[in-house]
Length: 166
Image 1 (cartoon, one colour):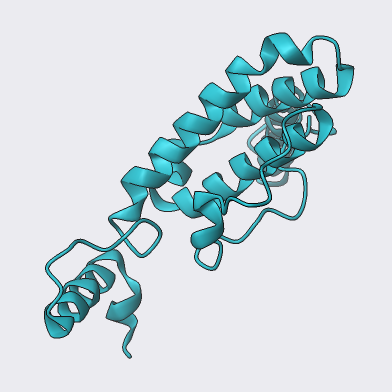
Image 2: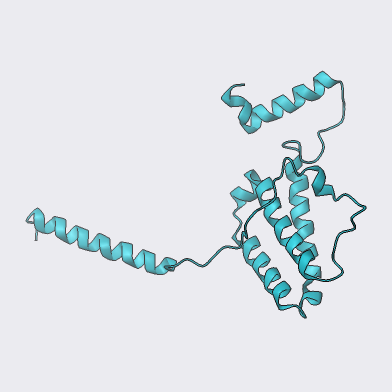
């Protein structure tokens, strides 16, 4: 395989070639390639709706309410680039929040006799291992800008002194 096979165009060409060689006329299922990006986006939207619907039930459980707040913070921090090109990673992080909410709230345990739809694609979409909630930075961004501007001003003054301009 060459490097082109790992690009979206190469992957799409390989998927089409694989379908043509198998004689199958159906599109690839969810989780098998570029076609899955739309369904992964729909899965993320469904998890978002699920979290919103659980908000009233979670008011009696502080840990669940905090988790829903963290989910909202995480959702607002996702860039368009990640939503487009890392849909599987974003979906795994969303599933992390959903599964954690299900473990906190009573009566939200999945039925063991039913296989969830995302268990089928778990090989393509690995589960998130750690909490993806964005943490507040140690130094706030406005302070970083002020430090950079102050350092730049000092550097310019030192250079002008060295060059005997001032």
